[in-house]
Image (cartoon, rainbow, N blue to C red):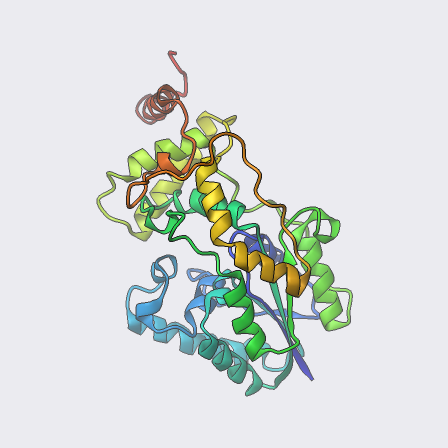
Length: 342
């Protein structure tokens, strides 16, 4: 009987590390289902497989310039699946975008795999403290985009309960939810934890290699420098995103030791309150209890711009530090030097 393990994320909960470990695995006892297109990330394809083109998230749509290109990718995915995995008994798919699928799309996913002989399913869902998720997603988003409207605390939503209920309704008894928390993860590592869960699901000793950390946090000063530059980008395209990431790496090279990114206390408090119901449900259903947000300083709600400015969400660095780092980056570009005249 064929078994499929579905890792649905969430975003900012070790998904990239899990996917890298799966892709690097040479274990012949299970198959990791990929797009088989070096230019198309597997997690983006899986996130798009069951959504209409007009409903694709922006980061996924960058991989599909037209609706026709998406339909071609869908057709090629299933052709490649039948070719590479048609006889496989143990299968794994992974995409943080899967957690956001609506119930009807999840039902279609199940039906498609059942038609290909899969009858045993295991669904793994790692979740993160909403306040920490907001901070982490914000810094990741700001690496390539300047829009902040989604991060207004009255608008921001990390749908833990909704996602879990959607998947649980289609796969009753198959969903496992775990905290993305080093203290709660097996071996303090999400890859080690996933390896253990994979082994139990398949009834084998699954092998996953150690991987380098993925999506490292950007420094506070680099974040504000990059944000200042991207505001003048003429268009957002795959090439402009690539150039933006190249600039980010240069900024991090020029200033390797920087303060961490911290939300303003009143922003963190508002995010925590907005997700209180989800956290209570998570504790009651799965025994997962994140430490309640504890901040220092003023946590009084304040009026925010709409969309909010980055400096209204994140405690900003000193302006002089931003100017100096931008100057060093310009000097490095013009003169090939990273020296700082002070």
